[in-house]
Structure formats: structure tokens, C-alpha cells
Length: 163
Image (cartoon, rainbow, N blue to C red; front, side, top):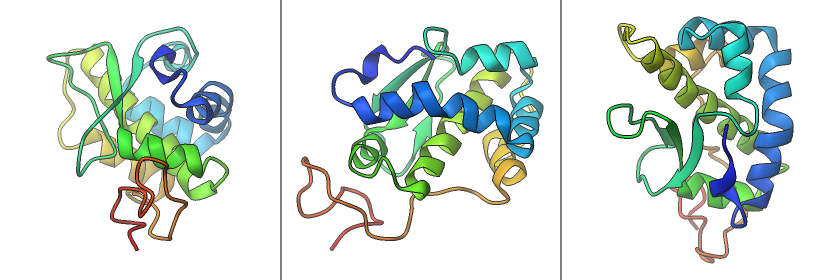
């Protein structure tokens, strides 16, 4: 992935994606098998997509009510992560639940990206099917309280950590 958009505002997110995501995805057999199945990418292309400096670009965007997004018809070489997720992750980067959310969201959006690349849309919601196959559930924002972001001192800006 091309991570230039993450600097300098998201150093912890960039570190996690560039140094941990590849290993987390490729060494967990269940996750990797599900990713290959639902993204419809070859092993080599899937590994390349997780390598810093290759397409797609990872962008941070406002998107209330969603953790991530892929918009193939308007920006087919990018996947997006919700700004609220990125902001909260910066203050909770060592929290395993937030690491899992970022991992699953990025892989979910890469599934859509891979599916788009082959020109044959799978029936149903392949991103959710991937999450169920890889993690046994639809991974969502942690329900526990998290540290507030600087932008939202009273809360982290998500329903999961409002006071």
C-alpha cells in the first residue's frame, strides 16, 4: 500500500500498517486463506498489496457510520479508513482490539479492491464474508472506553467511547 497520506499526522498508524499488518495477515493461516479467497488476488498480488509503496493508496477520510470504504468507480486505486478510526488508533495503538479493527478494516477494503480488479463482482458483501471467515465475526469498533483524541477531548468521536 502507498502510505504517504499517513505522514505526518498518523505516525503510529503508519508504523502499524507498514511494519505489522503484512506479518499479521500472512502468518495467520485462517486470515490469509480468507483474504485470498474473497479478494480473488493471487498470493503474489495479495502480498504486493500489503507492501509499502505499491497500490492501492491508503487514505484517511471522514465517513460517519463506517470504518472504511472502497469506491472503485471514482477512485479505484485507493482504499479509505475512517478518520475517527485513524484518530482513535493514534491514541490506542497498543490496544489489541484497535489493532484488530484496523487490520480487519484494511483487509476488508482490500478484499473489495481485489474483487474490483478482476471485473467480476462476487454475490453478496464479500468484505463481511471475509471478516466472518477470517475472524469468525464482523469486527467492529471496540465497545470499551478508549483514550480520547486531542481533536475530541471529551470523547474519541465514536459511539464506543463517549462519556
